[in-house]
Structure formats: structure tokens, C-alpha cells
Length: 174
Image (cartoon, rainbow, N blue to C red; front, side, top):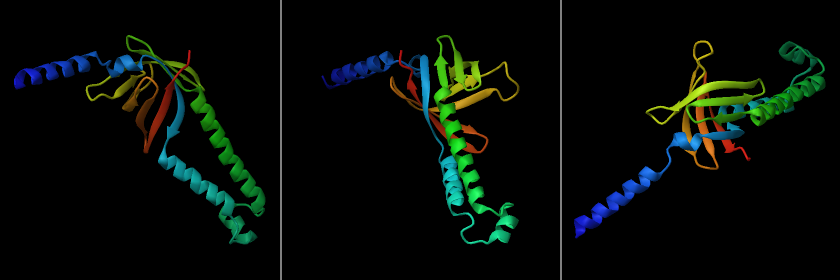
């Protein structure tokens, strides 16, 4: 009796696992990027903000000229803060413009500020999302680790040169 109960339980588990849609099926559809998490970039922006707020507080005009090429430190601060604001605004617009539209059959459309591009996509043996822009030059394959995937959230971890980021997506509302 004990073995038959275990066998039934095992069969039920197999049934529920087999009915669970795989990541490839869950990805199909359009996903709007809503956030990029990058601690290295956040730290650099914080440091630049502190610098813009405090530059010139302990130096005189000659030192400011030698260090920063500016004698009017107030104008220098305004320019530095404007550059940071511009970067943040451009980052916001880039995120808002990014949509990954996964199609059945392994084709996807990548919407960005630059327009629409296409790629092939698949899930590799390790469970990572691979984007292959074979029509582009060398290094056209992008590997993204799927950190989370549900019907309401997609998180992809990826590396670009020396930076590691997590892109957070929500499904596009129809």
C-alpha cells in the first residue's frame, strides 16, 4: 500500500511538471522594459552627483583651473549637473523604447530608440536566452540568463564588456 501511494504521488508530480509550460512558451509575446538594474552604473552616477555637488568647495580659482580647466566653478557645477540629468533622461527614454517581441518559431523583434531590429532567439541547454542577430557582424550572439519568468515579469541578466545588468520587463498590455 505504501508503494502504491508513492507511485501515485510520483505520477501526479510528473503530470504537473509535464503540463507546466516551458520558458520558450512563456516568452512568446511582447515585453516592455521597465527598469535596468546595474549597481556599477548606479554607483558611478552617485559618485558623479556627489562630485558635482562638492567640486570646488576646498580649492581656489587657480587650483580649479589646473584641476578642472574652469575658474567659474558655479558654471562648471551647472554644466556637470546638466550632463548627469541628460544622461538619466536618455536612459529613461531608452528603457521606455525597448520592447522585446518574441514570436513563435524563434524570431523576435527588438524595438529601441534606433528603430526595429530582428533576431533569432532560443533557450539553450543551460536555460539561458540566446539572441542571435546573424545579419550583424561578429559577436552577434547575446546570452542572457533568465532570472525570473512568469506571466507578469521577465528579468534577464546579461553582461556587456565589464558591466553586469539586469533588465526588467513587463508584458505589453493589449
